[in-house]
Image (cartoon, rainbow, N blue to C red; front, top):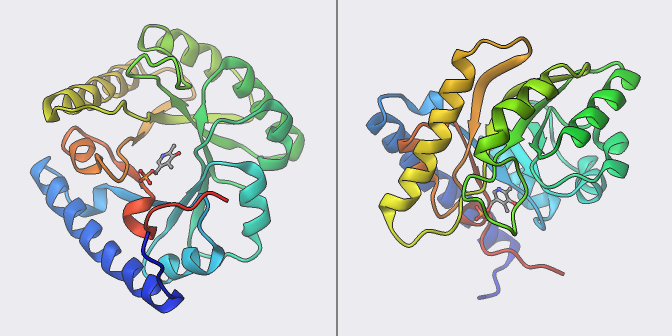
Length: 241
Ligand SMILES: *Cc1c(COP(=O)(O)O)cnc(C)c1O
């Protein structure tokens, strides 16, 4: 990767955000909605706080972190007034206590047991934690999440847990070569989102459909995503240390 100065990275972030916001607006209109119907999450894993704050200064109102530890280390350096934070990475049960109360939503609920732990710790802390259920929509062995087949049954079990509120679905789509394939995957997610919402189960509100990343957020919006999680297209390629 080309080495950029901080100033160059700050302006790249501004440019990238303009382009992405335009693309989001166009895709939203194509899907019969407006840009206000789609939230842009800046995914901040490995990104240093000054760059995250620059994105927040340029209109970002939602950030996503994958790891509890990394988020808690950066949190005090972030200007989070007016900006919400979500956890989007796989969560281990021994980290639940640390994250509850520190994020608005945990998007990566991928088992009944982790949901119960989040509920228990939330009740202890006197908060309600919003959660999304992660769907392994491509049935990939390497990915976390509920299979499409079990999703509804598990959602009903989780809905009975105190301390949490089910707000929608999230997925990390498989890498697809063909446009039609990725569209079909996202369309399938949207169908589950609508179907489960229509059942009107207590404590299941299908209001957030979180899908689409740097490489596929346009396709996700065209198929009904209302929250896209974009990292490298905003901040540049990640450098893992
Ligand atoms: C890293 C990550 C993203 C963002 O990925 P990019 O391709 O950099 O946009 C989105 N969602 C999850 C769950 C991630 O781990």
